[in-house]
Image (cartoon, rainbow, N blue to C red; front, side):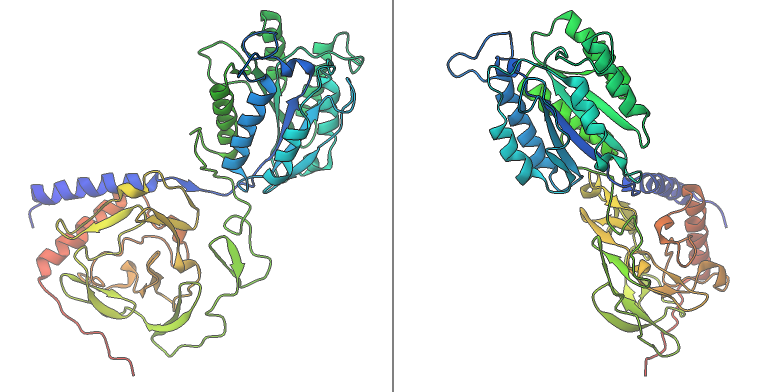
Length: 453
């Protein structure tokens, strides 16, 4: 049979489709980090942003701007990762403490009142940066080796207090404390946000030294600073968002996309045999269900039914779905991030999934993440599960020459390896092309599914 331009064109389109699927966003499940917000509450935070003077009229103080930005961040990310809070100084000019609120999920309700009650008095002139970092890094929460650990230091002034933490000057003391946090095990990295529109070059140099010591230099080199510069309310909010996106696995600042994961999508369920459905462990409905020969237990995670396997073959325009021939213009189960176009009879990119990030055993369909039911299903021996659909069918390698179960299932993974349902794009294109050529050469085939008794 000749290799027509039409088939070549469709094969190339399929390669492009496969590439887009293979590299679609997916969360691979590292544990979410602990993030400790450490806020400077020295007396200079009562000054307005642009200079070292108190606000006039409707102007806001640095503290008002900082706490407004933090409240916005807490509203946006509450429940997405463990967030804690500390401030310095407390109680007196050089007083420090550890966590005021230890890192945990959904701490917004505990941190927000602190932002209101901790507004500094105008007599609080000390800035005990080294003592604050040393107090924080010694906390038990930062001893959890299963998580990455971070401090988000927001400060507008030069470190200064009675203690220099054993160093020759206050700045070196702060740098040494941040370095010690970075070198401890597990390592505590520090992001430094320089807050204020009137920072002198000396202050900027100090912030650069602290940022370098924390191991988290600002990757944006356009301004030439190692720290994160925030000289307005909008800039402070944007910098905090950028930092949170950096530590949770995404570089897109300003949205809620968090790729880290503490759920059963990344951590096995403690009870053997349980399944992970919508991020929660629950018993598998198929546990204990015995089906007749030629059947298998199908479950979507909530109910269980015995279904016939797809061991027979359907005709053109149809596909075997859970044991029955059904019309399907694309003659295949379209994979995650795609949809069937009945006019072109092809799986095409689903644009509603472009900004959707799913967990590693999920796929995006019509703009929403869906669990792969094949994770819950055990197909009979020598059969494979069609990802996200749950049909148990004869694998390609076991089919007679020239036969397909109602078209290409496009599952080149092993029966239980569904997180890699889309394999190398070029190989998939060749499989698809070969099947289309076989279908052209053999003409319509109609073999009936056996009736269930």
